[in-house]
Amino acid sequence: MVPFFLFFVCALLAVAGAIVLIVAWEPIHSALSLVLVMMALAVLYLLLGAEFIAAVQIIVYAGAVMVLFVFVIMLLNAGSEERTNWSKLAKVAGLPLAFFFLLAVAHFLSRSAVGANIANGAGAVSNAGVSTRALSVALFQQYLFPFEATSILILIALLGALILARKDE
Amino acid sequence: MDFINQHPVLVVSLVKIAVLLFVVMTGLAYLTWFERKVVAHIQSRWGPYFVGAHGLLQPLADGLKFLFKEDMTPPASDKFVYILAPFLALALALTAIALIPFGPPSVRVLGQPVFVVANLDIGLLFLFAVTSMGVYGVALAGWSSNSKYPLLGGLRSSAQMVSYEVSLTLSVVGVLLIAGTLNFNDIISGQSGYYLGFIPRWHVIPQIIGFLCYITAAIAETNRIPFDLPEAETELVAGFHTEYSSFKFAMFFMAEYANMITVSCLATILFFGGWLSPFPDSWTWQLYLPGAGLILLGIYCLYDTIVSMRGIAKIQFAVVTMLCLGGGAISLIPQVASVIQGPFWFTTKVIFFLFFYVWTRGTLPRFRYDQLMNFGWKLLLPVSLANLVITAFVMILPSAARHG
Image (cartoon, rainbow over all chains, first blue to last red; front, side):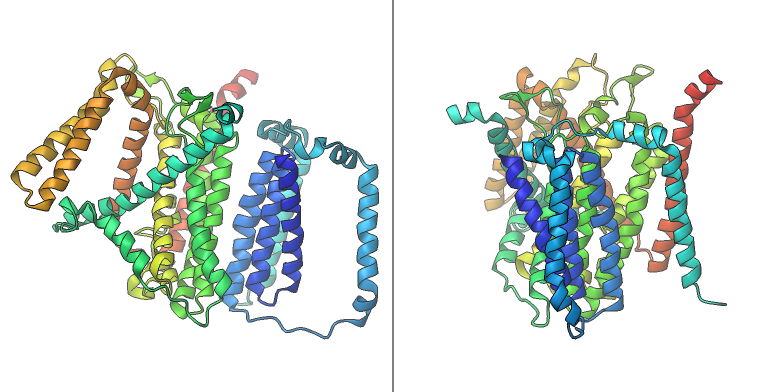
C-alpha cells in the first residue's frame, strides 16, 4: 500500500517538476524543478529496489550536476527568459503528437515484461533489488571493457570541451 | 497496546525520531554555548556568564531572542526560494543524523534496534546523497536574497562545497575498501579487535592519510574556519545569510551546527570505531567509566556551587550538581552501565571532534579564496586519490601474489 502510494506521489512530482521546468520564467526555478525531477526519480529507483542507483542518482545528478547548473546561472546572473512567439507548428501539431507519443509508450510498456511486472504489482515493490556488490561485480568484471571504454569516451569529451573553450594565447 | 504490538516498526521509529530530534536540538543549542566558552577561554575571556550559572541558560535566551525578533523579507527577493532555502538547509542537516548509529544494534526494544533510526545497507552513500544536497540551502539563500554580498557568499559556497566534496568522498573510499560494506553498523563491527592486545583496530591506523584528508575536507564542507569563505564577515558582511533575520537566520545557524555534528559522527564511525570502546573487553572496570565521570563532574559542580556561586546562580548550579550526581549513580547500576556503554563512547568521541572544530576556529586564520581552491584541487585531491590507489594496491597484493 505504502509503496504504491509513494509511486503515485513521486511520479506526479516528477511530471509536475518537468512541466514547471519548461514553463518557468526564471532559470533558477527551472533548475530547481529539474532537481525535483531527479529526486522523484531517485525515489522511484528505490521503490524498484535499486538502492545504489537511487543514491548515485541523488549524489551525481541532484548533488553535483545540478549544483553546477545553479552555480553557472548565479555566476552569469541570468535574468528571466524572453519568450519567442509561439511556433505555429507546435500549436497545431504539439498536442496530438504528445498524445500519440504517450500512447506509443503505453502500448510498448504494456507488452513488455516490465509492464507485466508493474501490472502485477511486482515491479514496483520488489524487495529483492540489486545489491551494490552484484552491481559492482557486473560493472567491473562482466562488463569491464565497455565500462572503461565509456569512461575514456567521457574523458575525451571533457578534454575536447576544454580545448574548444580555451582562449588562444 | 494492540496497535503497538501490531506496528512495532512504526511506533518505535516515531519515538526514536522524536527523542533524537529533542536530543539533537538540545545538543545544537549547547554546542553554541560550548563553542563560545572554549573560544573565550582560548582568548583569555570568560564567555557567556550572566544568563544562568556559567551562562548555561544562554542558548535558551538566544533561542527566545531569535523567536521574538522581527522577521524581515527583502522586498526584491524571490519569496518562494527565499523561504525554501533555510527549510532545505535545516531539514537536510537533520535527516542526515537519522542514519547515524549511536550504539550497538544488539540493544533492542520490541525487536527494533534502539540506537539508530534508519539502518540502511547503503548508509554511507545515502548520507553523502543527503549532505550533497545541503549546498542548495546556502546557494539558494544567496541567490534569492537579491543582494550583492549574499550572492557572492552563495557563489563561493557552491564552488567550495562542490570542490571539497570530491576529496571528502574519495578520502573515505579507502575505509570502504577495508570494510567492504556501506552499512554503518557493519563498518563499526569490522573495527573490533586489537593490535598487540590493547591498541584498537580502528581504521584510523591504516587510513591515517585518509583521515587527515577527511577532516580537512569536512571542515571545508561545513563552511567553518579556516574555510568559512561563504560567510567571511570582513569581506561579505555575513555572507549568504546577510538578508535573513529572526528564526530563518537561526535555522541556518542550526543547520551549520547539525552538519558539524553529522561530520563528527561520520569521522567517529569511519575512523574511530563508532560505539566500540578503546579498551579491551577484559578490562571490566570500563563499564563504570560513564558513572564515575559523571560523579566526578558532580563533585566539581558541588564544590563550585558552595564556593563561588552567589544568589540565584547557586540554586541553578545546585540543580546541575544533583543531575550529575543522580545520573552518575544511575549509570553505576551494572544493567544500565552495559546499555549506555555504546552511546557513551560514541558521544565522547563526537565531543572530541566537536572540540577539535572549535579549537581550529580559535586558532587558525582564514584562507584566501585562491589559496582555498589551490589547496582543494592541487593538494587535497591528489593526496586522497593517492591514498585510495595505495590502499587498493595493498589490498590486492596478497591475492595477486597467490595467483602469480
